[in-house]
Length: 210
Image 1 (cartoon, rainbow, N blue to C red):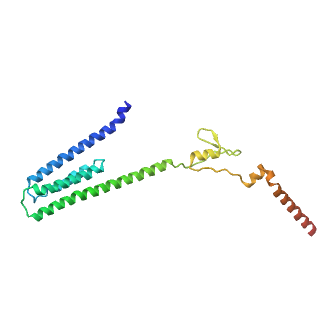
Image 2 (cartoon, helix red, strand yellow; image 1 turned 60 degrees about the vertical axis):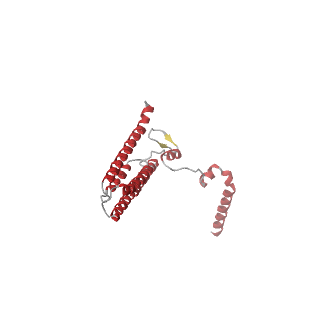
């Protein structure tokens, strides 16, 4: 059942694409035969633009370009196969306008699709980035003694762990000078002796002055 459900979207896409290809093919043939039946003065080949517009429903951009190329060939073929009935320069102008309309529609349509896909991609990335950002808000219950923070489940966590889990911040541990003197007093014996000696000399100098 799971495998069947996972195949359904692909099958639906294939069926839709098949219907689209058939519709484009039938409409192209109808326009082409009508173009062959009427004189050159009638710009039937401009109707090929409708086929290009329908092809934009296809997810494959190559299909749109290929179809535009086929329609261009049929447009030129209709120029030679259709019965004459107008001045040659008018027939050439009509075919040129039809080719221009086909390729202008193709290029502009593909450009618009690309722009919409780019906007959708940017919006998706922005939404994804927004979902990944973690912001701390509100009041945080913190212990006045050990500085642990209570989470929503009632557990007390180290402040580093809590902030790391609820934000994008990372901690790099070190020791401030005051804590270093408390934890490692032997490393500051010389400094303490110098300070005591300096304080003693100050007291003696003040005593002699008075």
